[in-house]
Amino acid sequence: MLEKHPNRKKDKYNPYTLTITEGHYYLSFKDGRGKQQNIEIDEMLYQTFDRFELEDISHLNRVSRHIEHSELTDETLNDRAFYKAERIEDIVSESIEYEQLHRAVSELPEVQRRRLKLYFFGFFFMAFQFTGQSAFTALGYSRQAIFFSLLRKAVIVAPLTMILPRLGMGVDGVFWAEPISNCIGGLACFITMYFVLYRKLKRENVQGTE
Image 1 (cartoon, rainbow, N blue to C red):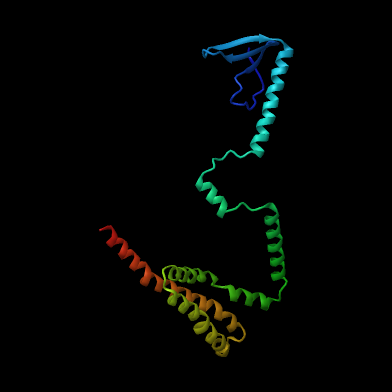
Image 2: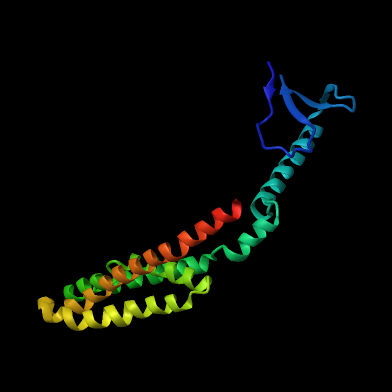
């Protein structure tokens, strides 16, 4: 019965296959005409080919670990320029800073933790503000961008900071002013951008295709 040589990863350019049958050593390969050949070899030659195979495996492992095989194109190079791989030192440093921040927040008194949460509550509404202001600025509507920036801080936050504490909310009212202004200012900016710019650009695109 045919005893197979240990199943190993082989270099694709290695044409030889080693086998052992009833204590005899064989070397198989295809000749120049594509015909399969199977010749018997002695143990010393077998061990020599076996050592070469192990050296090839070691080389393949080094190549797979240390040499890049990905195709370099304009797209991949562009991705590398804008999305650089993080170094392990940076990842560890960010993890330590996050743990320190989390620990510092957890050690705050209950009142301060609650007010910190109030201040950042609704912060995601700032995404609407950034989207609207960026669109206005990019398309030359700088006045609108400045207006909505002042609207959120000067027109909404400042009055609420003084009004809410007087409505029975106390110091918490100062911290509620920020999420309320983020919600009102952000949505106002985004909705205005949608009706002033988005629909206008959509109409222009439709007219351009006709």
